[in-house]
Image 1 (tube, rainbow, N blue to C red):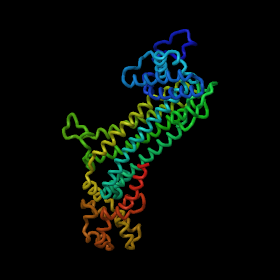
Image 2 (spheres, helix red, strand yellow):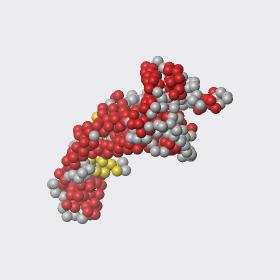
Image 3 (cartoon, helix red, strand yellow):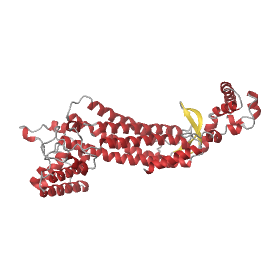
Image 4 (spheres, rainbow, N blue to C red):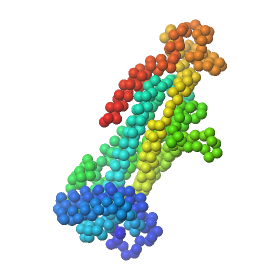
Length: 457
């Protein structure tokens, strides 16, 4: 069935049909399309544009189509151009002429704009739940590792001691911002385009505010040309998904490094690892690598829609059909990555002793040794040079600062006393950093309490 055949005298070429059709992918919209149609005909009846009898027949017919699609009784067939013509053709077949009145005061342009908005809104809600699940898992790791000492890095070089809780907190912040972006997008996009017609509204006395209310929107859109040609919300969603994917990729990269034989900070559960076809000793972090790799796929969707939209004049153009497949793929990709990544970190074990030893052997307490000297009257620049000598001595001996004898300390600077060992212990180095946002236990407890409040909202 074609919704536009009356103007044409020739049948559409099959190749043209294949190139033009969208049912193969916009069938994902079947629920949203039927949802929108039910709201539309409810409004038409309220306004006296269709009869109550037709309204009831149309809604019953649409509900029967929905039930048959979901049960598998009704399957999508190639002769239909898109989900809209598929639903309408089946409706007319089931209820007759009443079904032909459904499209009154509506165009495919505002219909597809509505379907895409409803679909993206539903997916945002599902993605938000997945990000929240990840945050809850991170929070659990944080609460259990307030005193798990590890090196903090800059330039991938060991820098200063932190805790695993503090390190996980950095990712908690990232994914919290991701949720905030999703919420912002949902709020900004939540205006209903239905009733905009092809681009210039309609002469029928529609109650667009009522339709918007029925569909859970905050109100109707205010310009019919923009309504049918706006894909900003798709671009924003793909941008937010790209940022989520980037955060997951950074996290995956660290897990891959931590899983290596050189680090041994983590042990990934067998369920999230694979082996080698030739090397029996291998245990590969494939899920983390795939999450990292799929980030480029999500970026590609964003670049695609930006490129598609950059040259389109007002109002609707067929180019906009290209907003769907890559968006669907990006959404499914990010949802899969979030679910798998959360499962992976929830089953991962941390080698706490190895982490702490790495922090000690990496001279992460060197800054604190310098601070010790400053607190004993040594100018910072001189203290910096003295600790540099200590590090060179330790490298030569193959030991950590904590392993030096007091005589060895004093040989480089007589200012050192027995209390230096307390001052440069991992516990002291971390615990004396008590400002909000720092890794000290008291500071972290305050932050965790804030995070818990955020997740309860």
